[in-house]
Image: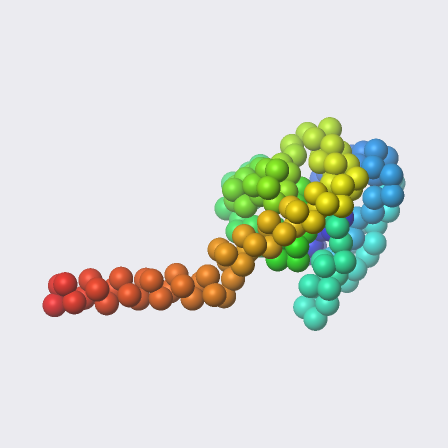
Length: 175
């Protein structure tokens, strides 16, 4: 599984060390690829340090099986944009995330990933995905399709074109 972020957001993972160690004990063979500028060590979960680099981040993500996103349930986190999830989905990874803020809507539980709140739910979600490559592929493809449909440059271009067309129509009616 992979997590991407910066040293400023790594503190969220540091706050869930017990849960990550629980995953490491319960889901044999699991390791955490940290794509970051700083790293942490866990007692029961192998950590692969992957220094963040804009030239290699997509390759580092694509080489993982699952993307994880845990965020505290606070005002700051509820206002975040979900970039981490979009990166995972663009890489074709299924996602496990706690449903806080935009994570609740970007991760369609059972479609492109799984919601998990408690330690037991995180272990079950990661264990389920780790044991089922076909499920990972299906959810990863669904996430990739959603990013292409809603968040790609082409999708943004369509939004801008529709907005501008609407402004032109409004101006003609008013003029």
